[in-house]
Image (cartoon, rainbow, N blue to C red; front, side, top):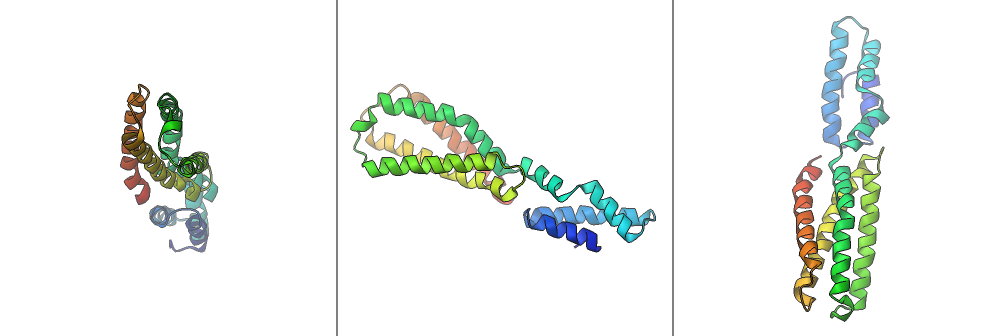
Length: 191
């Protein structure tokens, strides 16, 4: 910790709400700022208060980290592209007469329920303002959505009797979304 009880308390409060590596970086900067204020003649407590004031309150710092969270940003991207991809798949399934495909009803219901859970999780991550852990759910939901896209692509490849026109949009849209999601996941897991 930084060396003064006010700074230690500030960092402890941040540690309850942010990843350890982020708090470590903040601790270094906060300690340097505290040391700077000490070097210009402020007493330790005043220097600690000044350093904390420069860095911001715990809610301000957490809100800034949440706003830039890769999970939150990924969730927002996936939600923004969702209507296009979902609409193209909906049209593909209707035109392709999915009800005639050899898909067990429980599999279709399970897929639909999982899709609802994934979308709800993406919404929770995308709308998070004060919870970094909640924002990080975007990476989990993104991976799950990539799995759902892969499942749909496999179902079309294995079960569809013919390629229908809307699939010409749905397939590349899903592949693009999978690629973007997979490219974002390593950064998400690192922060």
